[in-house]
Image: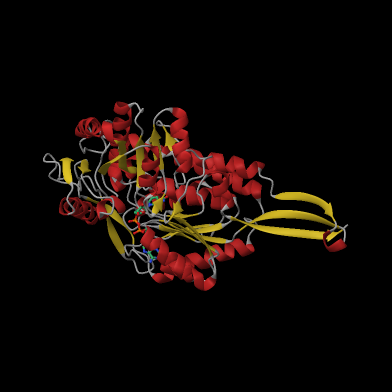
Length: 487
Ligand code: NAD
C-alpha cells in the first residue's frame, strides 16, 4: 500500500475498480475541515455487480468448504494490516478524527488482532457434531449436526469506529465461510477501501469473496436488505435505520443481525470509590468525543454523594478539553461532521429548554477555529422523561441524575428503550448484584473492561438483535443442518 492515503477504487469481484460512472466524492478531515482526497461514489450497477460476485463466489468456489484456505487468508489479512499499521493509523485519524490513543486499542490495533483470534477459532471449531445413534420414531438412526455458512452476507457499517465494526463483521463472516459485500458509511470510505486494497494485493482471498462498495448516499445500501441474492444482513448503526433494514429484509426472510444505539447508565452506589468512578465516567464520555454506541452517557449517583460527584466529574471533564487527535494526550477529538456537530448542539440547546443546567461545556472550544469540535459537557437537573435523558446524542454529553438506593438505581438504569451496556461502581458483591439486574448486553464492574475478541457484544431491547464477537458472534454467521442415516 502506498503512503498516499487517497483511494478512489473499490474492491468488486477481485478487482480494484473505480465507480462505473467515474463519480467521486470528497473525504474530509473532521479535525481540520480540509478535503483529504476522494473516494468512489458507486452507482447502483456497481452494487449489483458486487452482489452477483459474492453470490457466485459462494455458490461456485471452494471458499465455503475450505476451512484451511479461510484461516490462511485471515492470517494474511491480519499480517498485511499489521505491516501497514502506520499508514492505516494516520489515515484513520485523518478520516475519522479518532484520537491517536484510541487507535492503539479499539479503533485499530485490537480489531486487527481479533482477526487472529477468529482464525484460531475457525481452525479448531467443531464443524460437525456426532450425536450418535438413537431410535427416533422407533427407527434406529445415526445423527450429525453440521454448521455451515449462511451464504452471502451484507455488512452495513457506521462511521464512528470503522475498523472495529468492519472487522468484527468481516472476520467472523469470512471465517465461517460466507462471502461478503461491505457497504461502509459515507463519512469513512477509506477505512474500508484500504482494507479492499490489502485484500486484493496481499492476500489469497479469492475474487468475489469480499466486495467493498462506497457511496456518498446514506441509503445507497438499501437494496442489500431486499435483494434475494443476499442471505444475511449484518447491520451496525442507529436504531431508526436498523428498523428500516429489518423491515426491508422481511420480504426475502433473510437473517438480520443488528447492533444499534445506546444510552447506557453508569451507576455509582453509596459505597463506591467516588473520585475514581467520576473520573472514569468523565473519561468514557470524552473518548472519541462520545461517538461510541456503548459509551455510558447517563451518570446515576447515590443522592447523598451527588453534589460532590458533580464537582469531581466537572473537574475531570475540564482537564479533557477537546483537542487535536494527533496529540497522544487527546481523549476527546472532533465529531465526524458538521451534520453531527449540529445534532449534538441541538441536544445541548434542548437540555436547556427542558430545564437542565449545563455545569460545564455546552459550546465550541474557543481555541479551535476549524474542526467539528464540541466541548465536553455535563448536564444536571433534567426530568427522567426528558428527551436528552432518553435519546442517544452520540457526542461528549454526560447527563447526571441521583438515585435513592440500589433498587432505584436499577429502575433508573433500566428506564430506557436501549439496553447496550452499563457500568456499576460500589462494593463488589453489591455491584455484581446490581449488574445482574441491568437489562443490557455488557456491564463493567468497578472499571472492569469487557471489550475483547472473545467477549460477545450486543444489545437487549432496541439496542439490537444478536451478538458480535466471541463464539456467539461467529455463530451468527452459521446455519445449522441436521443429518441422519439408518443405523
Ligand atoms: P446510521 O444508522 O445513519 O447509518 C449506519 C449505516 O447504515 C451507514 O452505512 C448508512 O449509510 C447506512 N444506511 C442508512 N440508511 C440506510 C437504509 N435505509 N438502508 C440500508 N443502509 C442504510 O448510523 P450512523 O450515523 O452512521 O452511526 C451512528 C449510529 O450507529 C449511532 O446510533 C450508534 O449508536 C450506532 N452504533 C451502534 C454500534 C453498536 O455496535 N451497537 C456501534 C457503533 C455505532
